[in-house]
Length: 409
Image 1 (cartoon, rainbow, N blue to C red):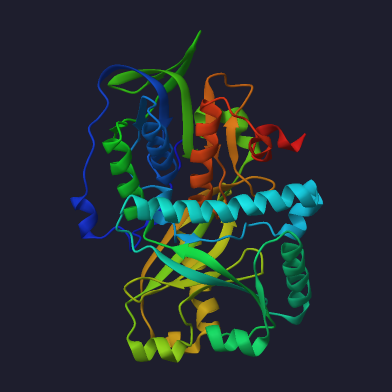
Image 2 (cartoon, rainbow, N blue to C red):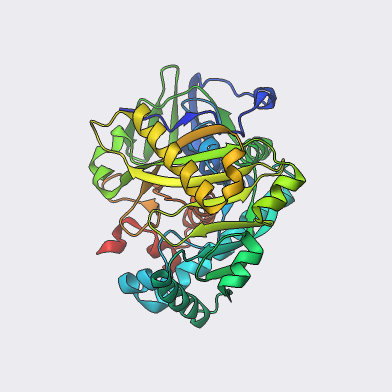
């Protein structure tokens, strides 16, 4: 079963989105070095990295480039992972958890640098992030988290309750402020990177759903309704384990996440809220977050829920977006009289430790995977492009082990 990756119409998909380049359907037979399945930002970044390195690469997308989970993203490029360093240390020890966090920080900077170098117009902007505690009980663990990060050489500043109020307008019991984060329009970023991949030599095909992948003696063969691709490797960048990889499904939990966007707010309305040019998110699980867009809309998100059978998706959508609105009206009372013009949901996969799977799986020769990004999809997309290109070149380091399928052993 192919699950719908989003519901509703994100603000990124406006009328101008229909003016972007389109790509043909795959027809006939092709033979390439690497085939990529999935035309979201992950697939685009991997295709560009491989094509730029002179690798003969073809990408196939079942629908349209960038219109799945990428279009549902709120595009917070955060240093922070879904799992705090304190909890990650319990799983993997201090040295490994510190390295994972440093790789996340580096990936944010690498992605921002890539978008700038390619001159992609996607409203890319740097932004500080404020990770706040709503209660006194939550403030203590958050301060301990900051101390552990500093021990690992990561940046961060503790904000007292008055400092949080001045920066955000929120009443909180303290927060961690980090610099060097970023935000963008994820759809424009994906489309721009895909154009760069195409310009570098990658063949890109839309409306070309892969129906079967056969293993060959030396590689794989991908089948669509109208064509085939033979490749030494296939990279599966579909977000989660689809039905074709059912044995891997137990390694993922699927969640729906929800986003609301206001109409563009006036300067006086923005001042009344008190939220300055920072991204905010809270320390609860699941967390809530907010940021400004380039056209002065307030984007709020969260209310993540596990995908379970038997729940009416339309009812769940209405309930979750209502709770989301109530959450942020409670934080920012002036929002009571502000219209939320857009609401949408996205589907994402979470692994047991919230980290992605990047690399091979022994059950699937000739396959590489880039799946299970949790809430850090754009950041891990950049990391996946780098790690997979290193593997193609025969360079495998301890960094690859951190995100391998075998790490839970």
